[in-house]
Length: 238
Image (cartoon, rainbow, N blue to C red):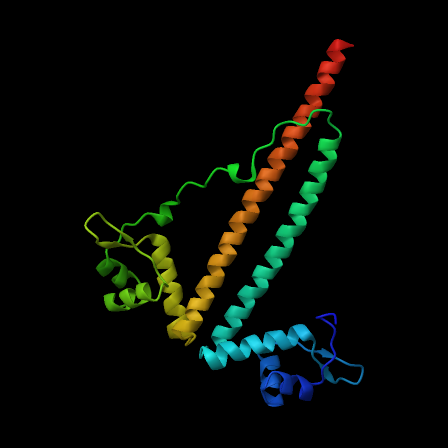
């Protein structure tokens, strides 16, 4: 069955995900789920909606994440899916174009390997400069809170030669975002962990996307230059 096809009325959908129909209506009002409507305005849920509702149930019931945290998590997952689709489509388009150009050459040029893309230099934001007392003051938290977040894996300060914790500007930004999620939105630490993990995935995918596109564009440029060189040589010989 096609996952996006709306087939389940609200009573069946609620039974499948072990929720009350009113809970599904609440999630719809919050924008967490968007069932289709039949000609008679009956809500119809798809298999993808059911999967999404089960994930919402896991986050709220098993991890204790509040709805504000669930909204953030689901939004980030949608961003990831969108970026992944865009990445795959663009890579396939460039590979097809590259294949066409390579077939037009009698001797294809040597191409860089996929892992030959140069690594980005470290950003000044990643330079560890703040000791824990200064970092705690900057983000208006107690140093013990920073240690707790480190134990939870939410923050990973560097260590000096003398094992002193050192925080970067990026760490400070991350801590401020954790404070916003916990204090302003009331998200628990399990929800914060999920949100920060998804943001890291999003950043990693974005970097991979940019690096792969740059690599393929370089290959296209090389094949174009080789073709132009071959034409120039043929003219000289003629």
